[in-house]
Image (cartoon, rainbow, N blue to C red; front, side):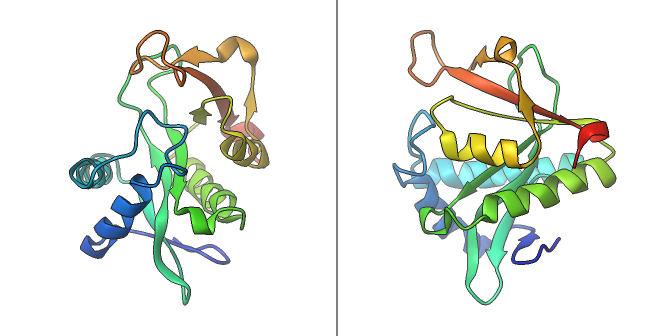
Length: 178
């Protein structure tokens, strides 16, 4: 899948080392419980591949042609936890820090959302993050997603009292997609 500046593609073995570097960056992982060591990063990439095998879509590897062969992932995933809004499909992204602030997350997420509605036949796509993750919240809003405070939730994977437990939920219905 291509956009004006990006190529969202299947993962390659060569993506694993730069993906591990992204997952080891404490700034990139600021709004996650911890950075990932190489083995955990590789396991995540393997789960992403399995998601594609099961569902026909997932978190695509992202490249910027003629600039970078791999800058992170953008795509669609089915969360593995249970909450009031699951089962659902989430749009998500994780990019190397040097590619932030260039509109890549929004551009790629728009393509993923369009794929979700047109190709995968989804009626709704969600996204969520901690309230302090202003960059991701801004991407969600640029996608036309909306949130209601009553739908904020405690992430069930994180223990009570964890500083990242509270999450804001955003939704986008096919009928209201831009």
